[in-house]
Length: 270
Image (tube, rainbow, N blue to C red; front, side):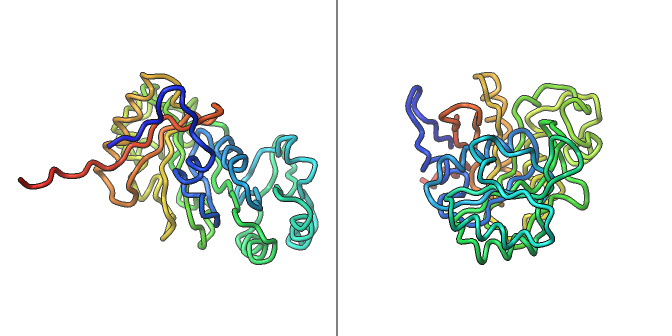
């Protein structure tokens, strides 16, 4: 049912990559709200091969570790500069400048496909959704910006939303969350609502196609949040067979995995 790391024990970077469907590399996209950026950099730090970091939506400016080598260009051709830079560094972030302060613009699907084909990245980590800093989101009809050849989609939501009133303080487009999850704005957002969000084709599963899906409940920072997130994960697994487990984590910690909640197997016949 649940696989928990031992208290005080270390969870290796390899285990994190495996749990979030990034161990084999490929095109790994993050959607939802409540920790996409922190998850990207945890995965990047854990991956030992050649990797790229970008977005198909807006993304925050890259941290200092990546900024010195990053390709951020207004040039019509971003593919060439990225491929040339990728030949000289192991980890490369790339995007386009944005007129809005504190943001960068992502790349198009065609540009991403060309970069994937020619830059030699073993893993591409892509922020494919925006949430305006909120910790909960259900997508609009045109979202998320998932490339058709995505290999893994990590669907992120925050445990800190559990128990809070559903409003614009915690949710980007709270009216969409309300419609998908079956509650009214202002009502408490409960584990059953999170389960619906993670299992709905109008929620976390919108537009995922044939990609592997890994739900991630982030910000599981204490035992009370862990218990509520566990309830949500268990119920989500009863509502869909699209994935086999849900990862509970606290991505700001050096060892982020809190628990992996797996589908319960029916009792064997006697």
